[in-house]
Image: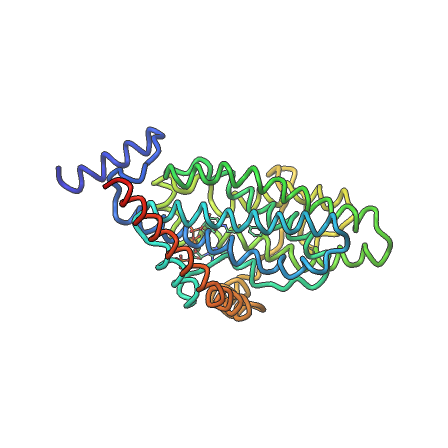
Length: 316
Ligand code: FAQ
C-alpha cells in the first residue's frame, strides 16, 4: 500500500470516530504534533505546580494548606499521566524532560506570572483550572486514545480544583471584609487576561489548528473555547461582586455571547518567547529540583536493576 493510501485510510478511520492507539499506523506529522502538544501539556502541569507551591507554607489555615498540598500533588500526577501518554508515541521521558530544562520546549504561558497574594491562589483555581477544564473537556474526545483517556481522569480532578479556587474567591470577594474584597479584585485583574491567553493565538494566527482539526486532535478552535470560558466565567464573577477588567466586555444579544476587548498579543508572544515576568525563575526552579532529585533517580534505577536481577535469578 502506498503512502497516500495509508493516509486516506487513516483519515477515514479518524472521520469514523475511531481512536488511534499507540501501535496503529499514523502519519509522521500526526505523531510529531501530538508529541509536541502532549509534552507541552505535561510540562505545563509540572511547571504549574510552582506558582501555587509558593503559597503552601503561607496558606491562611490548616484546612486551606491541606487542600492546596493535595491540589499541587494532583498536578504532579497529571504531569505523570501525560508524560506516559507521550511516551506511547515513541519518545522517552528523559528527552522530554531535557527539552523542558534546556528551555527548548514550551509550557503554558500562564505559569510565568507571579502569585502575589493569597487571593491569587483562589484566582488560579477558579480561572486557570477553569480555563484548563474548558480546553480539556474538549480534548477528552481527541483522536489519540491514550491522550483522550488521560483527559477523562484529569478533568475529574480539575473540576475539584476549580471549585476550591472559586470557594476561596467567594470567601474573599463575597463574604470578606473590604481589604479581602480588594485583594480578590486585584488578583482577578492580574489573572483575567493571562487566562484568556491560555487558549492560544486567535484562530487566524493558529499555526496548527487546520491540520489538527482535520485529524480530530482538536475538537474546538482556540477562539471557540476562549468564548466558552468567557461566557461561563463572567456570571460567576458578577455573582461574587467582582468587576471584569475589560471596558469592552458586553453581552451581545444577537450573537448570544459576550463581546470582549482585544487581547494583548504582544504580551502573549513575549511570554511564550521566554520574556514573561517569571520564565527565568520557573526554569531555574525546575533545573534545581531536577539536580537535587538526581539521587532519587539513581536509587530507583539501582533498585529496579536489583529486582530485575533477582527476578531473573528465580526464573532460572
Ligand atoms: N502558552 O497553533 P497553535 C494546566 C503555542 S492547563 C504557551 O494555536 P495548538 C492545568 C503553541 O504551542 C495548561 N504556548 O497551537 C493546571 C504553538 O507553538 P509551537 C496546559 C502556547 O497546539 C492548572 C504556537 O503557540 N494545557 O496545565 C500557548 O494548535 C493549574 C501556535 O499555537 C494544555 O497544554 C500558550 N497558552 O493550540 C496545572 C492543553 N498557546 O508548538 C497547574 C493542551 C499556544 O508551534 C495549575 N494543548 N501556544 O512552538 C492545547 O490544547 C493546544 O496546544 C493549545 C494551542 C490550545 C494550547
